[in-house]
Image (cartoon, rainbow, N blue to C red; front, side, top):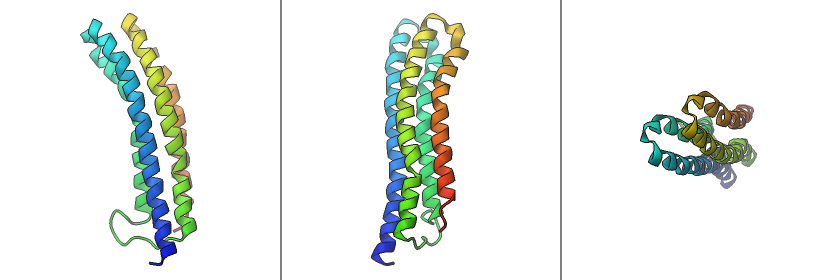
Length: 161
């Protein structure tokens, strides 16, 4: 492999790391925000644990989406078995940039979803019968993480190796 082809692989690995890292950090922050709210509710009513856990888990999906995108990226270039592909710098850069939508979208949507989930945890603290509404509100934020995931996958599929 020439230095330039190695640089293409470096860009690919960097893109996978960005997708996983930023979406995962956003999920960790979002789950933490919701968990703080949930802990307060559970001090008053431990019986709401299942409802709280459901709402706390929602911001964690963006980290999964980032990991999924990273798997697609590294599978595309043969890093999970077989012989790694010979990449140009431009191909590697393209793969890295294809990972950016879920990295950025995943981060920000996870944090926003954590805040929304925290508010909805407060909702079910007073009105547990409103769990359906309480799930829909943070699920609306999830839509944008799904769109970011979809765009990253479409962009990855468009890169010829």
